[in-house]
Length: 504
Image 1 (cartoon, rainbow, N blue to C red):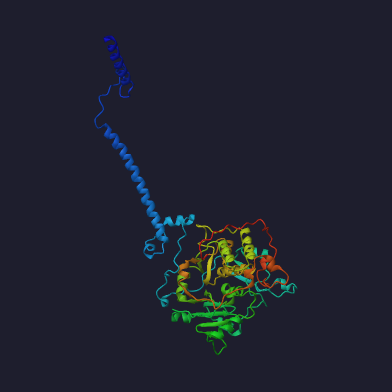
Image 2 (cartoon, one colour):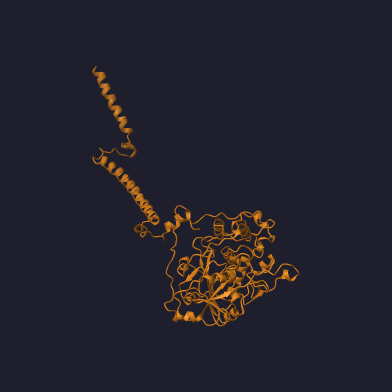
């Protein structure tokens, strides 16, 4: 019994020794290692503190990320909030909103409707530049005056824009020091002025011009006009017969000794024999071709007939032309940057025949006009064309001619053609496109006297226009939409368009 007990104790001791030597804390002294002593008493606390610190860092990191996320969400919410207190806290120019807006996560922050214009303080102190801005590229510009097709024995009457063919159109975009282009006003094609008006406008070097066609508006008197500007500028309102009759029935029209007709500061200039079926297309003549209608003008400001100008025109010339040494200035569109966006909006709002807008855009896309993108050569490809400020240099006049030719050949929606002409000139046309919020600070907008409408705006397919006896097809405009195009447009796919705003 004693022997068995002793062997049992010896066996347990050996087992403990084996377990001890298997422990990582014990090493063989012959191998130069050591046997540690007992573990420190604070060793468990160190393990607890180490694990606790890691947990604390992780929790703090999570809380920090959540705090940042909450702050970002509050920032986005405050910018979209209708509560003035919170919306005032929003930084609408922040990079976050810009990134989220471009990605479509949140609506793009809209620019202000109106903003202050950095105008000079006193019109009387404005120094008017002497002479004209020198022309560096185009120095001699002449115009096609005869309709070749009509002169060759065709029974058709001369067209106001002429029968420009596709080859002539291509050549018109090639810049040379001496050029001859189509630019409306073909002989015997209409749009004539009375002799008394021709005599009057010959003295007009500085012009503020507007136009009313088909009786949609009445003249609105400009305000805040200095005495100097009243003496310097001619205020010319171009009208057709229908509008002149409507104006006489609704406002006081006085007549001077030379037969000139006046409504307040505006001299009414009658444009007889309108050359187009579509009143909106007739309205493009004074708007775009002011240099042809009033050839003595050196500077002009165009405003649409529904507008009341509230800024002195001399201050506008200083702000938009002379200060930056430009010869042409126009505002950028508030919502659209790409002509394909504008075309889509025109179709949605039934501003012109949908299939003709698509054909117009397919030709432009076939000819290399891409959708506008940030960081490109232009601030925008789509202008607000209701106000145009320009010096009538050869290059400025050429641009106006080329722009008008596109309006004459295709649709009367001139905003679709502006960016295309800029593109075809390859950056040679230097113009100033100013912010839309400044544009809205230049005038007070009045409603039309009635809604404009024409049958062509509601056309949904070509058959409605091209059928026998159809009265919707314009017979004297849009020639390029009915003349066979030299390229294959069947494979052209228009760029996809995302609607950028509710108003767009």
